[in-house]
Length: 382
Ligand SMILES: Cc1cc2nc3c(=O)[nH]c(=O)nc-3n(C[C@H](O)[C@H](O)[C@H](O)COP(=O)(O)OP(=O)(O)OC[C@H]3O[C@@H](n4cnc5c(N)ncnc54)[C@H](O)[C@@H]3O)c2cc1C
Image (cartoon, rainbow, N blue to C red):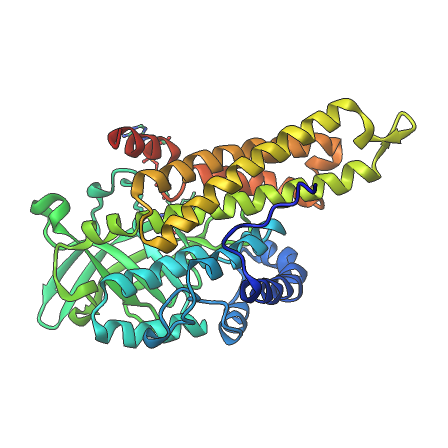
């Protein structure tokens, strides 16, 4: 009996989609990754190509301008990238930005933005974090003051994925600083030729070097009041909270894909590398380590597959998604570390994907809500 595992949610149509996604990653992403890492962003071209092929907004309903699939299509594309160590293409925040519109947008907002997100004309970003407010989102200071048909926005954001390339930002602002969480709103900010808007540095990071993580500055930026997400002030915190399970599931899916990729790279390497007259794969320590890793990755895979099933059924709750985010990303870091060890000194060299996979893994435990915040959420649910 083979130990091969296929996710229960896969079917023939998804297999064809997987092959298409794999081809895209291998021909349109992998050959450019070194250049992307050097210049610190993936550029607009790959976004448009992905849009042309129907790889963006796959789980956005077709009548809203998306591809009309479901979360399985998103998962397949995340997996194919993560398994090959592609971490620069910020599909996750792009999709999350689209989902704010799907779940909370007015019909006019959906019609205006979703087709352009699906085509890759607009790259989506989420602007929550500020220099003085990360985990404690209620502490944000970016202010939006109503002035006629516009809001005037002043403030700054930091660590924004897709920040440099973003054409549309779901920007979290304070519309009423005295009202606590009820004073938070989301403005959909179109960045092109926007007076007072400025992208700061693309930040240098430990890993994910191809992903443009940037600072954003807003000085007297006028945003049409029609871009207030959902059209009602003070809904921002509620809108953010509602979409958290989706965001956390995505991070867990990427973690499992990355672990599967790291393990596959390692299996190849240990069969080739010789020491003491035989492949290192033949040492009992290597065999046992690989057995442990394969088991851990399978446990993570089956848990995430169950979360995907719940997502499809509409029953994925925040605590379960937080469990998946925290546990899979902690494990991702451990698996990447154990795999790297089996590469010896080569594992520490940039030209080996395992080195990049190790560095890329670290931030998964931090963004999308730190793993400590995940444990808070889980504990509260018990
Ligand atoms: C590469 C990268 C990409 C990112 N992309 C985005 C993006 O696209 N959009 C966006 O808005 N943000 C983004 N972020 C920001 C990210 O979400 C925050 O860094 C994260 O939420 C943590 O906030 P902080 O950095 O301010 O840390 P803090 O909130 O200052 O936390 C510092 C430490 O204190 C711990 N801590 C805080 N509160 C508690 C508590 N109640 N109990 C226990 N421990 C606690 C934290 O777990 C952490 O260990 C990104 C960050 C990185 C590094």
